[in-house]
Image (tube, rainbow, N blue to C red; front, side):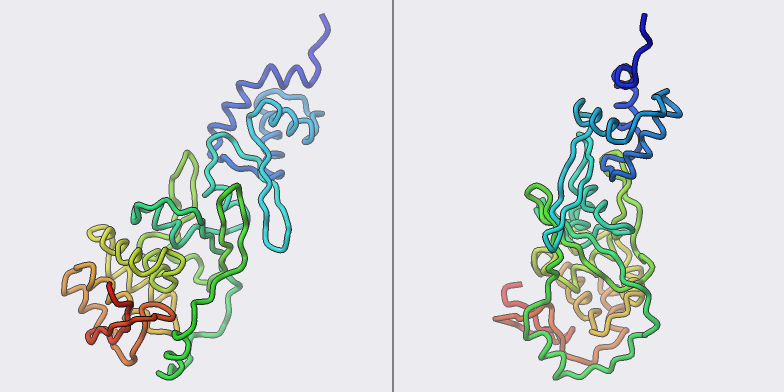
Length: 295
């Protein structure tokens, strides 16, 4: 009887290869990742070393162990990912850029702070560290001018099937408030609850708007530490007084007065805004904050 060739050996090892894909803690692969998978299969499962990466990929896709997915990137570029049946769009999104993490509305959903299933995924990577500290002196006229305009939104958007993936860039804070998050038999990098609430307070348009942000603060009651929330805000070191926004949301969400005092003790020097370009606004005397009528 003739010895089986490399293709027959791959076919004979199909079940073992499928099990490795299911248990390796990864559902989305780059070509480099598939190469590592092949290396494992050669040394641990007995596949012939002369199997090429192209042959291995052809086998995996033909046997539907993985499928090739093309993601449309900004500037008409495309990237390829190889995904198993268990892959989620969150994993695909995070795989698009090295050292990225999931944030904003996506993090709200993963933490159970919204009942909506967003059709947009937000990923963030941090810019190179700068030696410039936040030392800009605010002026009320400049605050008023900035928040009379629309919020600037990223135009760096990728598309995967019917999902839009925002490729955000953030200030380098050494991924403060970003944690490992177990999901779908793999591990994602996601902003924690406190960091997420800060992020959506600063950019409410990336979370469905102020009403959705307020709902998230209500849902987070009993699950977050206000001290840690304020420590995160200090670490992020924003120019604008976003503690007034945080205080307003905590107040509206019914947090304890002692927690509100922690925010007030930071000091309130300026009139500020809950969001950008508010058409019909009301004013909170306590937080010196303009907010949309109807909240």
